[in-house]
Image (cartoon, rainbow, N blue to C red; front, side, top):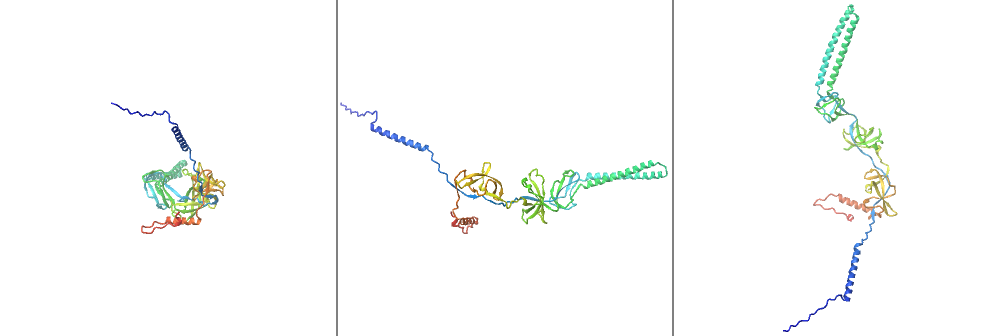
Length: 419
């Protein structure tokens, strides 16, 4: 059997690539390496930041203007004389006839204490008067008998003088007992608290059943007569308040303004509020009711007509512990921070005490987005002032128009306002 063996076709694996294939692989690897290097360089480099845009700012020129500030204080209408009435003796309150806000007349009973102890003391004083009167009558009778005996020379003059001294002592004891009775009678009367003037009850400080000592305030009464307006000022303003200065007074509820004059300036500050109390006498027949709230405008504390530098509050910012504004430098077109000191407020504007001079240009709005040395340009209005005012008026009219009914026509916005 013949077995034919097919010849084995084999190609030895080349140990090295051929020259042409090796050159192509090297070129491909080089291109890949170059691309990776380029990509790595691109990924590591930071893009340059975009230049900051030049902002446009609204500027205002600093200038001195008149102040319209008028300090106004809240005050209260009070009676010129307000008394705190109390019992002149101690005891337990058994009845109170006075009520808050009640008008009383002089001589009217306001409250009453338990009078039994004082009545017993008065009865004891009456008994002492009766005893002293008996002793006096006996001494007088003895003196008359001894006087008759002396006239007949039955007794000596010394004995008669002793009887005369006994009579004088009896007279003194009787006077003492009568005075004691009168005092006890007054004590009994003091158990009734009586209004000594006409006025209005403004306060109740004690109630029935309460035991009070002599002089404890029970009722406060505002006497009829002139009225005062009482208000308080801080210590930096009190030096400008003088007795006799005119003061304008207006009621919180409206009505005709009143005039008054400073009547009293407190010599020391209140222990709690550390303010000084001012009393103003209201001039005129009619005055607000007691306790009414009024507004007081002292002419001495007004600043109308004075010149000062004023800025809108939108131009102010906080720079550390100071208040500052941005000042525009026209030569370099940049802004710089300028510290200012604020004195007070005039309506919606701040009054600058120091830090600015007339003629400077200050950024009015958007101060929180600026930084020192930043380039800015003044804001230019895009439309004429007249057209801008007309557009603003039309916008306000549309905004203030009431909502139309469901069946009614809808108001159209003017074309000049559609921007």
